[in-house]
Length: 553
Image (cartoon, rainbow, N blue to C red):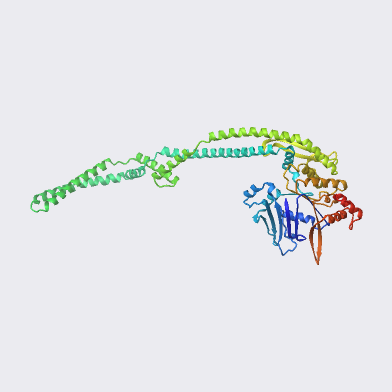
């Protein structure tokens, strides 16, 4: 419930503060004094559109603050979800600067207007003529019917199961998508691995192949050069090996003449032998070296494959390619088959669905059973409120899916005049008709549904006398369960107040400002008497006012 509303520098309000008790609060006053401006200010802290032109003093900022008692509305989870400080008493503030900049706060924490609307929507039910009312919305209509049907516990059970059902369905979808992605990725990995497996890379083969290719592509040059070297060493007129042999013979003749000659002879002998060996190797290599274009093609093809893989994976060696191959295999091996998990979850969801359908069927039966009684009571009360020809029905349609409330789609159908076709409320009801219908339906479910503070703005328009009195009685009964605030011109309704505020304009010099005061019993009697007759009121009007208020005449 709202405990206090403070307004500073808004419209024709310079500064105003009003406290709201429990029960029925009535606001009356002079025409144009600013009664509806109070609702405009309240609309701002509910996230309504702000306009700097509405400042009382254009050089100062406008501040509107509401203090709410929120403990009964189970909003702690909302505060935790939005990272807001929670306390049983909540302060909501809206500021509007002369530049047009608007700011909103919940318990001194800045919030966006959308969040403000979500919160205040759970705290204030603001009904103005020709505004969009909750009763327009089929979700609220169903909520009313569930309250009357006593579906609270069954609906709680259903919604608890439905949350698990919806969560598991989301999980199943994620698993299916994950399985699809895993399958696609596994296919891609298999494709890459198949390429590696076909190539069958070996450590060191790249260097070996590159060496062999170099040898084969230069085979003719190798053969020519080594054959010439062999000939120079062993053949010809003065082969090097022959010259070394002659040197050895000559040195042998003198090697006993000097102590150093034997060692030199030995070294020369070794050189001769090495040269003969080298000549033999030259001959061997020259003979074995042949140009082989087919082998060159094979090697080049293999190296091209290796180079292509290295470019593809952006590495420079076979060793790195083999590391990538191992990594791909490891990743592929890590993919588990989700089929069994998916199958188990699908089975669980099917069981949950059967259970939900069973509970939804019970909910539907209760709703349909309570609808005729609800319809009869609504029509009876509307008849008392000068709507004797109204037709009202509750329409049921079956959904093809499990919603958060079951399988029913409920709509209130309405026709105000004889012969009119029943249509959805939002399509046919006028502002006054909607206000009365809203009052009637909410009064019927008042004790069963946790409605927020209810605020009505002149719902008595177009009615008077006994009808106004009956509307006042309905409001009074409604206030036994909820805080009700009503702006009215009806003395009959005003007489039912627990707290009666009077709004008036005060002129000071060249300025005019809205003021408000809470009336005591004597002031209430006079105010209601004026509403009944004139100012000053007659004695008969005063007596009538006392009678309406239930005071001794």
